[in-house]
Image (cartoon, rainbow, N blue to C red; front, side):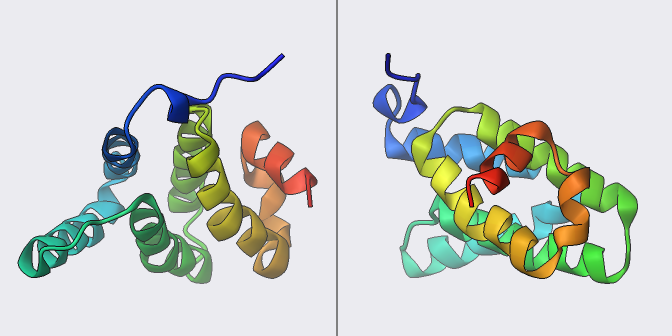
Amino acid sequence: MNEFDLDRFVTLEELIERTREILWKMPSARRFIQALDAEAEEDGSDVHMFDYLLEVVTEVFGPAVEEDDKDLIKSFFVICEELLGMNSSLLREKVDDLVAKMLIRYYPHLISQSGPQLQKLIATH
């Protein structure tokens, strides 16, 4: 039996907006999301799921790990669980590429702190 995939039921634009809304819940990510949106509006381009997630990973999660900000790291993992919980194969692929592989390579000590869906995704590698 086929597993539910949100990608079959919503447009790409809707999926991108839902991704943005989830990432927006993280207050420390908001200024970076706003900057991406402003840049896209200025040059007439589109912001994609990958762009939003990459920005949050590099500008929020990376510094949080460097500063050992346990609350921010925990918040990031909660957001990742929510993203994976949308059951979108496109979004799962982005989380896999940007978060799971990064944890395996650079921060294996943090894997045990991540949520069950992210740990399951990591286990596929």
